[in-house]
Amino acid sequence: MEKKESSLTTEVLAEVEKKESSSTNDRKEKMREEKISINGLEINYKIHSPLIWKKGSCVLILHGWGGTSDSWARVQKILAKQGYRVIVPDFPGFGKSKTPKTAWGIEDYANFVNEFIKKIRGDINEPFFLLGHSFGGRIAVKFAVTEPERIKGLILCDAAGIKPKPGFKTRLIFTLARIGNAVFTPKILARFKDGARNLFYIFLRKRDYMKADDTMKETIKKVLREDLLPELPQIKSKTLLIWGEIDKLVPLKYGYIFKEKIINSELIILPKIGHSPHLEVPKKLAEIILDFLNLKRN
Image (cartoon, rainbow, N blue to C red; front, side, top):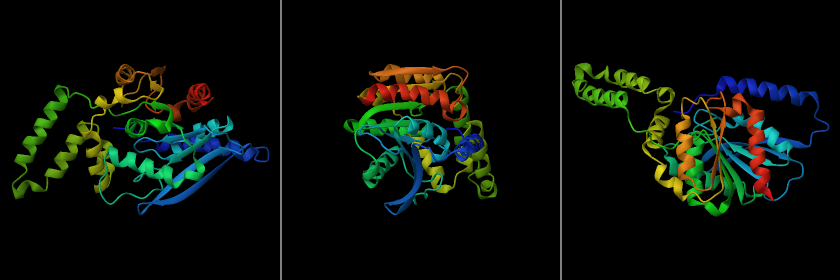
């Protein structure tokens, strides 16, 4: 499951605010935060843009699970300084955006991205660059497969989406979980059932599941059920894959699988970096992204 980012995000935002406060008169770009309504849901998003920007210079960033638009503040600012309009929404159920009334799957979030683009038509032009991190990578893959003509280039950073084959430990836990469902059926033991299920999720490192509300718990289940591996060969866009060498949440071995399955792709590995390069080494990550954007912009 994707990593929570709040502590690192706070440090990054503090750094950005400190630098911004020193001088604003000569700033060549600006950031604004907006709210819109999509199918009855209030959605928050941030746009960081140069005062003058060219067609073909839009970047849409999809954050990871537990992240928000704030998570990408530093990278967003660096890209904007180099002439790109960078748009980062808070996914429904995250940040300042409202939570859907029912559980969503990957296709629902991809449809949301489509509706979001329609709503901000004046702020984004097509084709645009699409970047997805972790959970956001799942959505970016789905969107790239269904809307290839709208994407100028695809960037996947420590992207989730490939369903791992269960090892012995996982199979054992699920077996015990099934037994637990039977054991805890009698009313006298029913009160222990939810606690036991939570223990199984701890073993499976599904901490986000335990912290989520009921709707987002069901969303996690729906998202994790879908395996995007069969869809990767359908991606036609030029794709940049960026992976932290020591990512423990979505290990590097999945980066190699993405590279193998996406024909027109390149894999860049960040030494000694984990699951969140945008928080660990935002400047280095932005440099890599810019190399790709500048190559594809003209």
